[in-house]
Image 1 (cartoon, rainbow, N blue to C red):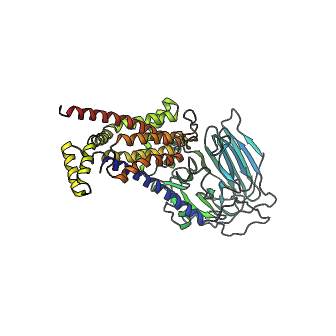
Image 2 (tube, rainbow, N blue to C red):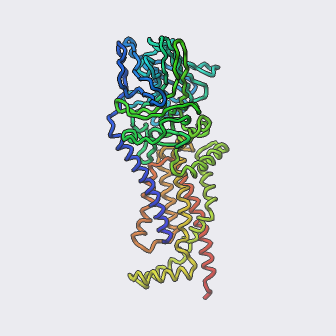
Length: 557
């Protein structure tokens, strides 16, 4: 295998990787197509108490948690649902009085994907998209996400000097119950608290459920060229981090532990996360299911015990709804930082991101940090890449001799191969010398690909000049064109393949790769460009050294 074939092998490997990612995306899309189109759920309260019936949108705890029957709570037809508006330093939110659902959540510190002048919308309930947070109580006549709540005000705002904002909703009718949202300054954690008092003459078994409900549509701006995961994630100490795709829910392939005393459950999408974070040590039941209108629910049930007449209980659950910032996630719950999924190369990608973040702390620019990281990676692999480039340079030096052998033996491939092996032996060239360095570097390249693709820190991060967002393609395609130019220079520094077909492929490849990289984030292309420039410098230097040595070794006539 000569140097040109090694380059082709590298290109083939990267192509297979990208094709695999696209195949995964196609599989996910096919699974989504099975479900009917999602329509925004519009609860229609009934004027009379609902009859005990099976409602798939209301979870029922397993028998191991409670033997009590489950029935939907009554609601009042007089209230069709109003919207309570909430604004904090990080959020602009809307809460519906029907169910007390969190039906809209804008992240004020993050711009929209397609329109950066607007805030990023994480939760939403509209005709086009559904992603909301629901919670309620399970028990005889207890309020759930179909019940009606009232609030003292229609608008709430976190004061300039306030550290916390509470939005309290009172259940309309039935037992004395309330639902409180507690927002904290500079925190993406929202505490959801249910309080209930047993006003009946009989004991009441209580549970609380907390769930995220969404459609299966990919988030806005999701690219088919760079597929990312959208779906459920569950973490437990027993099984660790597990993805549960929407297609898996349809087919019943849900291998995560249903009951546990640790962990969390959430919905993942590119850069952002919604997750319920139960307190460690407390019993809980995780569940995923398809609910009416083509939606999917992922949630957790916690027991509240049996309430004697007149007794009260408080059942609460933190909700994280925000960006996938690894340090902050790791501090909130064990395994929550794994939501930033680097795939099967996490063991390499995680240290790469740590170094990249450390560099950014010094330079303050993610583009500059990428350049410095590329240089560091190049220095680490310098001995290996030097061996590869020396092999290529030696092949370039003996290229005239190879051409003479080709002319001498013509179409006799067997004699040609024998003569080439003799030449390699005489010149002390190992034709496989460049293979190992490239093979070793491939996992690093793929890991860095995921670091730059999955890290929310890169989202809308400016670099310089026309590059104002490293997470999206170069708007002027300048970086891909420059990268293509560097690839052309690299091919000219290498010996031309003796095979005419291979030679044509090597000439076409830079153009094809440039077009391919038109659709890649600018941060990724920047890495490849800098890596190519450094490779050119290294290879040019090695070529000159070996060519000079070859000239000096020639006998004087």
